[in-house]
Length: 344
Length: 249
Image (tube, rainbow over all chains, first blue to last red; front, side, top):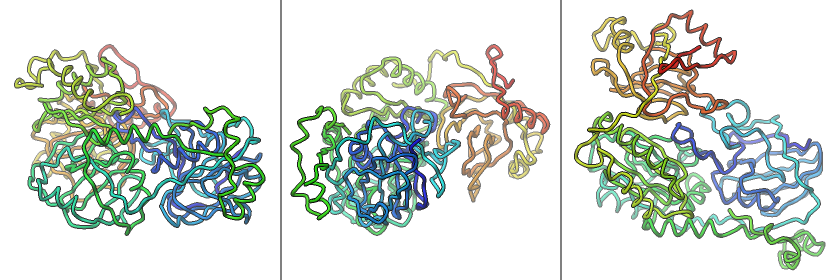
């Protein structure tokens, strides 16, 4: 059986898919990839359905060995140096790792979350409809904890590793673009001065960042009302403002219920980009209307991961030389278009 | 009642601030109606004390259309207008009998709670186990059940320093609320007991035994019974339903 063995990894490495949907009313977090675009990219590159599970690594990278048989892998998201047994490999491009070889993922140089996908997908048994790790759900096995050196992750049987290698554009990190938000539901707690401060200030990502929440440093947002709220359901993307005035953006592992007032919610598309920011990186917010936010979500969903073939010898040579000019996409037409339109 | 769009994937229905008991039946009735209506694009419904969150797929519907559909469904729910909570037909609900070992290693804060309330420990147990509760919502941790119905005499402020890891199955008081814990997790509430009942088990369908609207009564048990029931659970012994009152087998 093909499997990936974790030889070394950072403390925030976990198995993630698109997330656990349908159990929020029971108190289960959505979990799922911090950057859903990176998950979509690696799954498209190795020919998986979009809901296949992959390995998520934060900040520091690690080493993964392939055992049993060769496997097709792909890496996307935060930018890191890759090598297989000392030979450099490209991000955003699928490649074969022979049985017994080791993929080394360097520290993220830009962006923070790096996704490693494998043809067939990480095949640990799903719990409550998902293979996303949730450290608070009391799950047994690797879905209940972060990965550690020595973990063995089975890969589902894949049709064949014989097809062409694919490449796609990197996910956009765009560190200068504002993070778009929809105001509410408790913006009236802060009034115009609080909203102006949120929208007019430059915040930075603090060192208090994890899969649950990113705390921001910057001008405190004062509340005009001190009324205690009754706890309400909350979603990833919610910007809570606790009494200290420091905005807290809830991320993929956000708890289901919260009592702090929420001044706004980050739109789903931009939560991926926020997740990729390092502590110290600036964050500016831009308020948009709810209709525009939904239109952006529809456009994102309609866009597919644009993959193209890079497996012909000329292209491979060009890639090795670091140039993309030789990449050929003429072969695309020869294959089932459905293969190339893996919707995110 | 107020309907608000949350980000690009949520519609929140608010029944206003105030004691949860007034709104709970309205929230649960709206939850039931939206679920039964099978509206296009609705992914999840998350009921809470005085609000309901509807999570939707913007590719399958629009928040504006969904808001109108929800307002229509809510139109005739008592509580949506002036007469909050009045006149709602109580749904036929289940009532769970939950065994609890109070005090000692099971409820390390029971003595302190009794001291703060100026009550004997036995009086706290009698009051807590003598009341009937309703599950208002699940959340914070998987299967963690927030109950309404705590006798006012038992309200105690949250602890100054939360415990980073409380054991599974805690029975706790936080302010005017009490809860049945599920999995291990952090807690700032005062722990007065523990239940051997596994209210949350990801391998079971449904994973959470308790649901919003369910009735709860507590039955004090001794340490030996606690251990015996725990062991039965660990061996795979399950929960059976005895008429209207499910009990631990």
